[in-house]
Image (cartoon, rainbow, N blue to C red; front, side, top):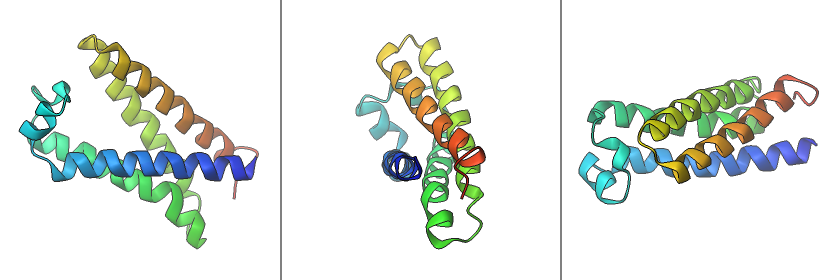
Length: 124
């Protein structure tokens, strides 16, 4: 199970590192033109904050336990991802973007599995 949690955390970290970097590096207009319609009513600063939180969570999922420095930060980062994905799911549900909503739910569940495993029976 520990290997499964490591793989799951690494996959989530890669996904959120890419997603967060995209939000940090692209302008609001570029994001909207690439199909991210949810950015239109959201202030640019909030989009950058979401991107920074995603990058921080990605780093927190893998780096602390890999370096054995405060490994308890990994499940905390996973909790942060669950919270972010709940917010994203609410946003996409309000906009009736069902494919995006489904992705957010799946990612929230995967992050919740990491939370359960690392706070519960398979803590570091």
